[in-house]
Length: 410
Image 1 (cartoon, rainbow, N blue to C red):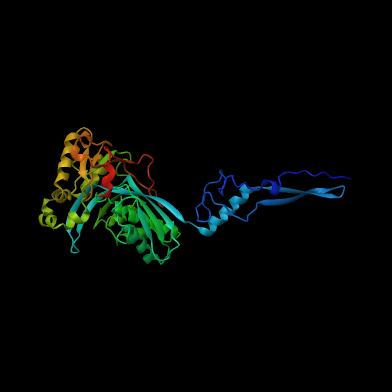
Image 2: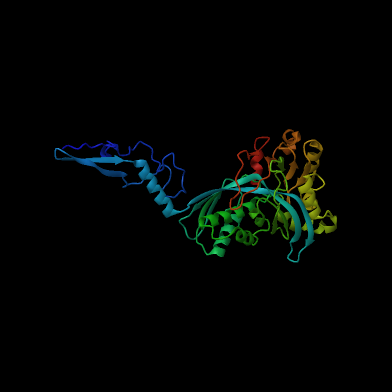
């Protein structure tokens, strides 16, 4: 009696092997991309792997055995890719590194260590840098590059300090290649460098399998910078001490609150404001606001932002360092009375923030004196627990005239 054999597939490996000119990605289009590894890059090939399955389909017909061969390259390639990802682990990570504003900043006293005690409502905003981390084969040093001339790439950079701190605290030995795509201007009072350091600590912990808690990272970060611990909040926090004591404030303001950032090309670093000899000689606590920080916080959370609550005790010394900054703030207030509910300096300067509109006053574009200022719209930003900050799709630094963003390098 004869038996029939049904061939599920008539394709043989010999006539259906992958064409050299065909797609070379290891993953099929329908499969979500897994974590990348050096041996599984888009466009790479894995040699010596053939996805061939053999089935003996049926019986004999006139003494001949019929063998069925089916070839499924996508399934085999996906299997290989899964194994590569499992073996290699995480090798690359891109993270958003947002900056912050100080909605109010009160100086409450002088400290024996030379710092000042402060009380401030910090809030993360949508302007930020992008940092790309890749595991380095080196076990001796990190390598940092950036798109902006003048930014240090040695161990004085807070990114490198943060990575060194993480290795010191955890005993891990991962080193990295890092590229910093910088959009936040330096010397702006926006905490761009502090955010970069916090982002580097978060990245290092991801590569190490999250062996440290967020609380650990927050506590450790205070050893290399006063503003860094804030970025381990959910995005809004009442900060005291040097700034390293962080109390999360859930949703004190609507995230869609529009604002514009305007920074002249002159930098105004924290060191200049706090330590510049002229400033220290003239700065007196009795010259600062007498508003109770908790009263300011309560007013903001209940009634929103107004000019009266956006107090910054560092404005007087900063305006002494940069008199033009005081003139800029006055012009913005005068020109934007109907547009901004508040105009204030962030941190130690030199960024002036206008709350209520994403657009700068017309004089910023029309007046030749302001041809080199940095301008960016922004909104408030928060993050979820165990997730890092994500860049809003619309986040973008803008400039009114050609060359405006050159101030990023100042």
